[in-house]
Image 1 (cartoon, helix red, strand yellow):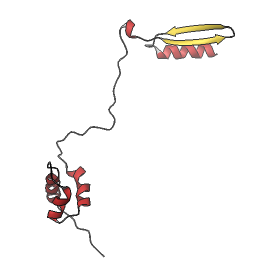
Image 2 (image 1 turned 45 degrees about the vertical axis):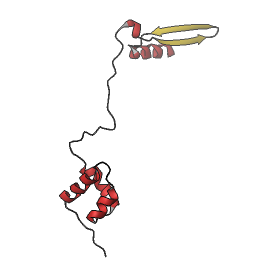
Image 3 (image 1 turned 60 degrees about the horizontal axis):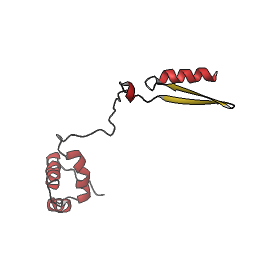
Image 4 (image 1 turned 120 degrees about the vertical axis):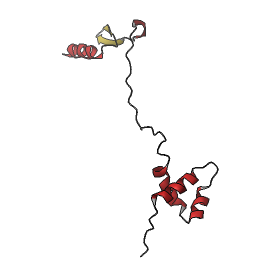
Length: 107
């Protein structure tokens, strides 16, 4: 049975740094050190520059509500009662109030 080779961390880090140089072939660096290029590819994410900033996959953002009346878009609800229509406009700054209003109409 073949035993896996374990490489020291400084050795891995050195190879990764060499591979990250512009214009350098990862396969040639791996070959020069006697390591499989696919193995070196696996090392790269773990041994990249730890100082390099990493961005999270999701960045939560808090959206501000419009503060000026001309920026507010009203919520418009149109209800039909046979031949007649009733249109209700509510400020978009109060979605909870609008939901309560619609629930009260439904009762």
